[in-house]
Amino acid sequence: MKIAPKQYATALLESLDENSGKKKEVAARFAESLIDDGQISKLKEIMEIFDDLWNKKNDLVKAEIISANSLSKEMQKSLKDLLTKISGGNKVEVTEKIDKHLLGGTILRYGDRILDLSLKNKIEKLKEDLNS
Image 1 (cartoon, one colour):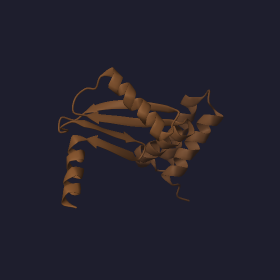
Image 2 (cartoon, rainbow, N blue to C red):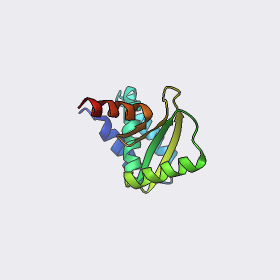
Image 3 (cartoon, rainbow, N blue to C red):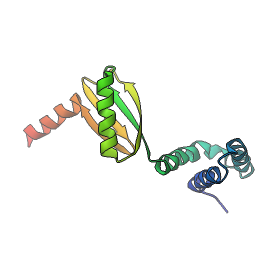
Image 4 (tube, rainbow, N blue to C red):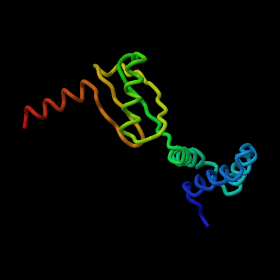
């Protein structure tokens, strides 16, 4: 029987819940079972799915703020508050990324969504509106 990566990820999450004090042992047994099943090559995919399941279970939203320049602490807090409000997540974990190709503004990525507040996007929308 072939086991799908999502099934492995779900099994790992359930095993960690049941054996919360034995995380190292659970991880070791999990790795052994992947090796035994010849599925170690799928570890990256399994861990990405596990990460998503873990975040959902713990009401954690991972977000990325992309901007042309480093943002002030006040702006970071405002954007984190906005992400908390629009994502519905109890906890928001934010990483900041600098992209020198942006002219201005920011791009917010959270979950499987993108909120493009970049200057380039605003100019493109203005062009579309003018051509309509």
